[in-house]
Image 1 (cartoon, helix red, strand yellow):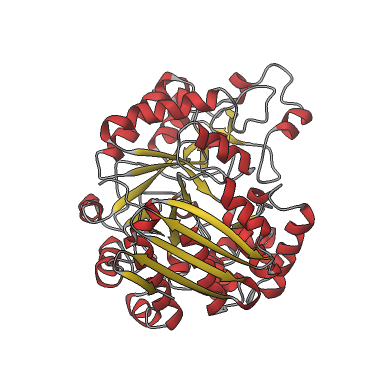
Image 2 (spheres, rainbow, N blue to C red):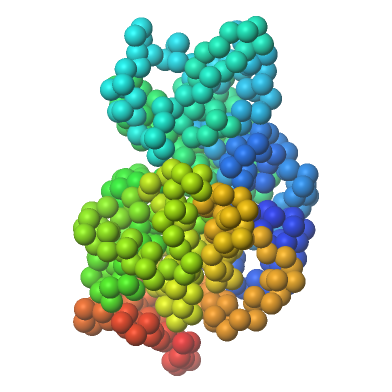
Length: 479
């Protein structure tokens, strides 16, 4: 199915109900017209990281269902699937075969072996310090072979996620086979997770290494183009990298928006947010929340360091049931670039502020993605957090079908559904955006075609907004 200019739900296969059949029921019963697309987070057999340590892309984890369930959903909604370009599970048949057979394994070229990668007497401490890392550890794990030998292989993230050597012919064929398989299974978009880490080059920081990273993206496009499937590279970094990717003709994520909206709402000042809306890529997917935390690194230089510090401090002060320790080693999260919190709780569980944040997202250039917890205006799940000691689980609540039935009756959720339904159907959003700053904390965003327009007028200090829809039939006040 082709991508539509309609909101996309982001969800795990077992977060809205227990499995894919339950998810389909929720979509068809409660979310018709509310979302037009679905990004199902990894539904493959996995050994960790809530699906992001995939063992086999040709299978659907039997706990969630089967390909027939995916197929039914894909016939009604445009779909995004995951492909972890950077790594594969340590429990995958490829890595296990390598550990058993070593040099005789047909998969030995899938992995980056330190002995082959580093020259003699390296890596030095300076080499390791140069590498771009999100966690304070050297990027390797010890591979223990059946013959009793041990050597280091590259491992950027957890020890369950072994990095792939994307330069070898064997791995390139694996990438081609996997992407082709997923494209044939109803994908509209394939997200290349952690793609910026995939290229490793000596004497570089091994992150977004040019020009090799562009060749890698073009390779994925070449594979998927015959299927009409779009490649979406996923990267959290300086906003200029997103702009550079967009200039090359790729869609991107707007990961700067979450902190910019929080800063605007906390400070009552619109200037920095509106500056971004002027210069941000137009072919993008917007987010306020995802399965990870609220990103901080993405707004560097869009906000000054003082403004970033203000927003972070305000988040901890105004956020509901939020503590710094939830984003620390004590809760198994050493990623210093994100804060673990639901977006609703980041705004103090304040319905008016939250609905305004979503209205701004809907009027931001790009297609709005909304995480399932955010779709139900979910609060921080402290019980799941404490039971698991996983910081990111604060924003990964498991909703039962009965609970969903109750949540959708809340006024804030009903209003959000109404807002998204308007965003999905108003043709004005196929037009151009005009930005008008009224004063320090007030502005209007107007989308217009020759036939119709939609205007959002915002007053940040009071959390008040209005939406006016103009068509040939006249004007209608939506909010």
